[in-house]
Length: 359
Ligand SMILES: Nc1nc2c(ncn2[C@@H]2O[C@H](COP(=O)(O)OP(=O)(O)OP(=O)(O)O)[C@@H](O)[C@H]2O)c(=O)[nH]1
Ligand SMILES: [Mg+2]
Image (cartoon, rainbow, N blue to C red; front, side, top):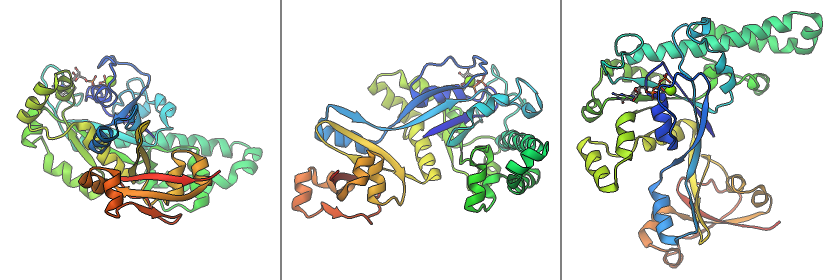
């Protein structure tokens, strides 16, 4: 899975990217190319399983993040460096929009003051215009000759439907598409069709007091639009990460940071994308696997290897809380908590699974 990080200039995109992926990209380099790196999603359940099995290798769930250059108001009309680079990152599965609420006189906000709802709308418009530009270009191309009309004319109705909803300031995600229509436009990878998660970058004080400018207005809008949002303080967390464990805990407590920002972001992302984790355990490896929720057992097995899906016989399943409570697989077996599940079983978040298969 690949998630693009977008937002206005100087909001903390690169700082967040570094935090999420443990990278070291220089902040505010004014780069206009996208940078990609992989982040491990912390999971206490994996920590525990790893302490139990002492495996050679421990693998957390992974998400690929892309630090996308800043968008500015009017970029779609050529302002700043324009937004043509956006077309190079259309292949992301979801977008994180970073909005800044921290105020720093040394780093003025591009719009002069802090207003998260305005910034949300500015970026939304840029995504909308960028999709619109792709659609208009395509329609023009199709209509340019009889030959292209004959070959691609059937795409016009759905493209026009998309154009219409964008012109009314809606997004393509809200269209009720038939399967055929969805297939026809899949290749365009429209931004306004992608799941969106908002990350607010707060100052340490704002995070501690859960207060920032225009908070009520902003949060009401997010709830109304059903957009998940997470509040973090990227720069502070970066600093805390450099400390040793003891100091880390002390600072987190002092700043009322109950959990690292990446956990909040991962949770919002998994929820928005309808994802869950299941685990495999053993002396070689303890590992988290990410799948769509409501996946039947053979489909979940596919995340590991298609052979296991093909040769699926049964799944031996223990729920994580049961293992945590009883302390070993043996004790779970004795307590009758290891279930044998068949093809129809829908894998649950936190299931520890041993697949039996035969190919
Ligand atoms: N005070 C404060 N400064 C921050 C915070 N987050 C980031 N910054 C600072 O803001 C500046 C810009 O941060 P970046 O992470 O480079 O922001 P960006 O959005 O990637 O910026 P561009 O790529 O130039 O658009 C840096 O000097 C950061 O140290 C924060 O939470 N508080
Ligand atoms: Mg940056």
